[in-house]
Length: 355
Image (cartoon, helix red, strand yellow):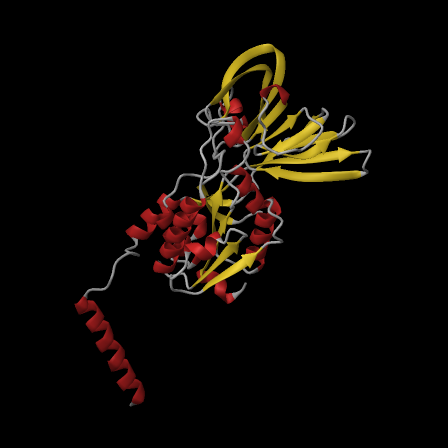
């Protein structure tokens, strides 16, 4: 491992998170650049304050990172993706940080951004701050606390395995005979089949187009496809299980917010609990959406195999990190008497060595 890893914190921001088409079709609020810049600065300041001697930050065409840390001291480097203006930039930045042995990563975005980070670095030690539209996986965390916690773990002051938990994923294999290929994808919250023939703007906005949903996190308080599953069969982060929801007539009818502030009625054909690591074959023509974003077209004769696996990022619990550090007096500053005593002890040792 790179010797710099023990004191390096990575920071990734998605400049497009919180700005997609759902602002035009629903009541979703926007997350402006100024808000992201403020969070980024607090994360960077917190990490440097707590002993990180190197920050590695994602750079983008909006120059959010550079604007956020202007005038802030410390060793700060920037990682540039391929500048595609898409999710591929986030994937590339995460992969680069992985190769550079960064100690911890703080990511700003929604479910889709977290998925992209985990695609680039599958078991990334992650603190995810919500700045997206669908925010089931990330949490509303103060940037300052996130930066301090990231540095405490990156420097080894707090042990990662004591303050983190491996998250679940929805693992998807698409076997398409017409293309003689097998596609392997992952989702951190849910995967869904959408009955459309094109990817388009990626966001899922038409409730009648949803055919099935497989979720490893199903929160009844959330908005989007995870909320659909959550209102039928709640699944928590620590539950070793998932759920399959098939949409169609013959079962329950459900009222859900598929997008912020916008409600729809869905017909539910069945609700099927899914044990961990138990593959199930699903079919249907359309496009598979991962964590709310349409990505993979599926042909009529393709086979989709889905399973719930605990193979996702190592999600760091910021509150646990801070409580552990406080119990270990990691935030204490030496008094004048202690500093004087330490200085005297050092001088005595130096004289003794000279003798």
